[in-house]
Image: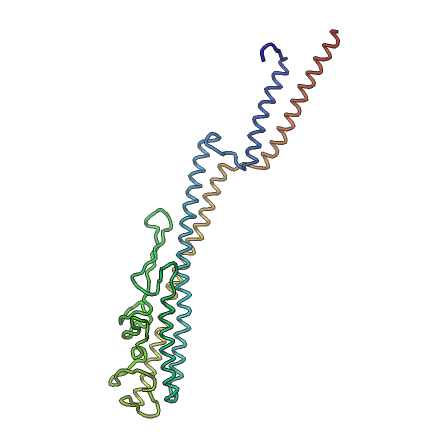
Length: 315
């Protein structure tokens, strides 16, 4: 203010107070936000380097979310293959029970066998996740991209568990004829294998082990039971193999998901090192600056008191 003259000591003290006030504002801002770099104005190099790291971390987390959904898709298929194993073993149990049973018991066993097989087909059709089923078509694929690089893509091909075509290497009954019809019903004679000269078998009632039934002799019936048992064992082994393949895929996806989480944290941590403030240091700075302001104000007060004393003497 013009017309007012301050001593050199007062001017210096006021300048020191102004500087302390600015530093105090900066320190308080860092304590409130937790960051020493809040904008490009604070430190352009650190700001843009940290932004790049944070953006990359965010992109990786987005990819991780997609990976996790892929894990769930494959896990849904794995849940189904576990249930399929149980149903196949039930089929095997019914087959074993029909062997040597009475005619009425074998008739009942045929109904049970067909019912279990149809439920197996329906179970496989229900094993979808967000509209994608890895067990119903070999043409189905699940592609998961791990990063922005095109090469960082993992593709899982589907299976055709209840294929209506013979000899499908991705189905349960790879070497049999057409086991499942289009509606999921069982083609009984394709599983309960016939032997040369026996013709098609429509039910266990045709397979008597005590006397010849129709055109099927006792020895042929025994051979059919044995061949059918082997066919179910092969289906169980095939299911185990396909389950193992799906399990390997889950492990790969899970490993990438874990890596993405760790990598994202590393990137984010790098950004933090560039921008985050040391709160302990800033808290200490805040106390020191508060004390510095108090001392400055006290110094001005002392200077004013001295001037007042001189004025009293002049009077």
